[in-house]
Length: 90
View 1 (cartoon, rainbow, N blue to C red):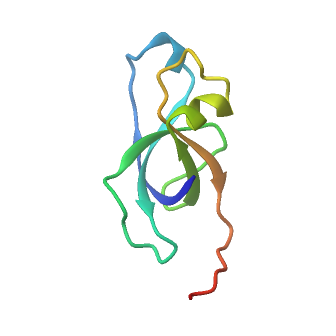
View 2: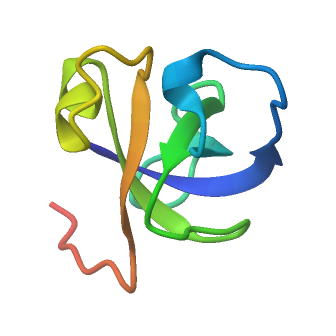
């Protein structure tokens, strides 16, 4: 799992049948300080995240397990909207 911020929406009127009904968002992976860690990615969202939200995402096989996407081509899923972050530096 990793943190990220939703930076945009993705619309696809034509897509793989298993993706019908899913909302897609652009997410910028970040560290706990908000610095970008990698290139933005597209993540499926079923929890209602929006642009500007800090989110928790999971990628790879873990993403397919979340909503039983075993036969669906999903590589990243938003699994939480972050309310706050507390951590100690050290």
